[in-house]
Each structure stands twice: as C-alpha cells, then as structure tokens.
Image (cartoon, rainbow over all chains, first blue to last red):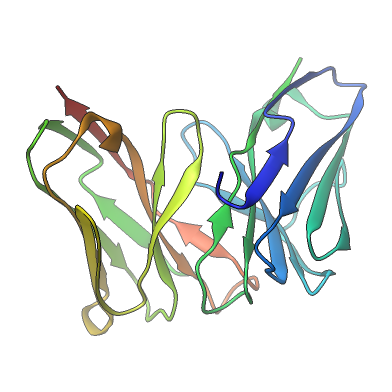
Length: 113
Length: 111
C-alpha cells in the first residue's frame, strides 16, 4: 500500500448506470488529483483539489463529477458514460501542487459496456 | 506546453544487467519525478528529483536541470523491475498541479 487507497479496483458499468469511485489518502497531504490513463495515451489530468477547493477542471465532460468532502477523501461520480471512457482512473495526492512528489493509488480499471 | 520525451521506448534486459533510461524536457522545471508502473497498473513514485542526484538501493537518478534532462539508472536488474518507467514534470505554465508524463520506457527483464 502506498498511503493512497482506491476502491473499487475493477468496475464494469452500463452506459445508463451511475457509479462512484472513491479515493482516500492517509498521508496528511493537502492536494488530491484524478488522472485518466487510456490505452496507448499518456496519463492525463482530470481534476485537481487543493485545500478541498477545486482548482482545475481540465476540460473534462460533465458526465464526470468530482467531490472532495475533506482533505483525505476524493470521489469521482460517473453517469451516462460512453465506451470510450473505459480506462484506468488513478487518484494521487501531494503536499502542495508545485514542489513535492505525488503519491498514486492502485487505480480503478473501468469498463463501460 | 512543456514536452517530455523518454528513451528508449522499449528495453529488454537479461537479469543482472544494468541500464540507463533518459528523459528530456522542453522547458525549465522545478518538479521532476520518476515513476514505475507495475503490470497491475500501480504507479510507484521512485524519485522526486528536480535537480542533483539521488540513490535508493539499486536505483539512482540524476537531473541536470540546466541541460533539461534526467537519467534513471537501474543496476543489477531483477525480473521484478519489469514494467513501464515514466518521467513526469509539473507544467507551471498550464493547469495547476498538472503533472505532464512522458510516454514511458517499457522494461522487460528476462530470467
């Protein structure tokens, strides 16, 4: 375990379903992130929360909705996804957003059918 | 935005061999990190190394910020070193906290 825990590890959902991904960090960090890793594409930033405030939404479709209720927890709510949204979704945390290392969770492998 | 290029894209080693992975970046950085992604998808932070040299066991890394490159050294490779190694830098000119990843070096260590 790295100190960042993601659940579930695997998720299969239909295009009309609503599901949520959960991320919890035990490192005392004040910034949390959602990244997406698709096949044959570099990892790409989706959302950044710093001190529980969303500071960046990297042009992500509204069918992805983040929530950060406190500095230790981050959720990604999913609804009416498309098959092309199938990917590995990685959560990360860091102390500040500029000059520290990032710690990633194990990821949720999402398949949309 | 900042560009990150890694080489080689693929590397096959015999167990016990040494290797050097390279990361070039197009602009000055204050945050450079090396990660190892295992076959199950987990990204492990190996080094936070915006400049200088660090060592951790069989791994070491050197970043020469003025020349815009970083090197990751793996000595006495083991089969458990297999996976993809990513270099990533924070793009200060773009989205806050945006860690820009290279395409990675896929390493296979054969027994």
